Image (cartoon, rainbow, N blue to C red):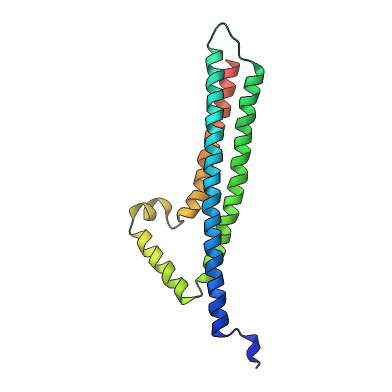
Length: 167
């Protein structure tokens, strides 16, 4: 059998190091994308809330009727926020899957197994990881729960704006 078919120990070490670098890069991408997501959503929610407040203030003032343009802009921003949330949810889920795939590959390596065991021990020492997250991990929570919270906020904002405009 030819030795060129199997990677040497130095090649395996190099590929293991490359996997660790790739995993670190994907994890940094996830953190950066979450930061951008939170900033974008916060700005949009602040603008939508200010506009909804303006619509509510105008609706209750007898002298000035609510202008349809203002209502339309409020709904447009809210729907844009809803779409942005869905897009980010998709991107964060893809990134989470990439990190998971790399972690699965790193489990083959002894160092990877030791790191994963140590991380699991430390996380399981905290009750909220055992009870609330149930082995899903923080990346899963960030990738899935944050977008759900923002989706809920956008739906509430749209419903609230419609109710104010039509009452």
